[in-house]
Amino acid sequence: GQQVMQIPQYQHVQEGEDFTTYCNSSTTLSNIQWYKQRPGGHPVFLIQLVKSGEVKKQKRLTFQFGEAKKNSSLHITATQTTDVGTYFCAVMEYGNKLVFGAGTILRVKS
Amino acid sequence: EAQVTQNPRYLITVTGKKLTVTCSQNMNHEYMSWYRQDPGLGLRQIYYSMNVEVTDKGDVPEGYKVSRKEKRNFPLILESPSPNQTSLYFCASSLNGDYTYEQYFGPGTRLTVT
Image (cartoon, rainbow over the protein chains, first blue to last red):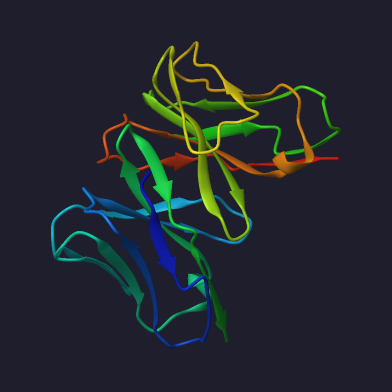
């Protein structure tokens, strides 16, 4: 089945520093979704990328889909304490199964 | 308010005692699914349903059953729970199984099997 590798597993940054998490696949993806899960909460949809080379922004968050549609990244500029949580990428596998990356846990020191 | 609800939110049980975790959505979504979340493993799909009476296995279906008799409800059944099923469970729904639609997650059910 579809495998999507997400790195890093964990990152601890100083407030104001930037943060990036990456998702990589060995196969070409039709699309990729990103979710955020706050500590003790449930995953919440952030965005979906569909087109090759697509870049989308949500305030301090920048999402990119690689030209070959095999990788994606989420970049947060100038992290804040409200950014803490786990960030997941997710891809739809053939047969309508949704496969999530293992997630990147972000901790922010104030 | 559009939402996915799960019950119970917390459950401690013993090995072999059958249990059901309910899931309900009020958004008229066709696609519903169950996930378990374990540290370092992310979210793994247990079962999913494209519509009423249509269910299929996800990546980790062993030890679980589901049913979809009504569009809004998708209960998860553990016929004979074992300690390795101790986990955090999420139900989710989306408009349909098309990849373009976002998943809406319930609040989660923390299950402990002793």
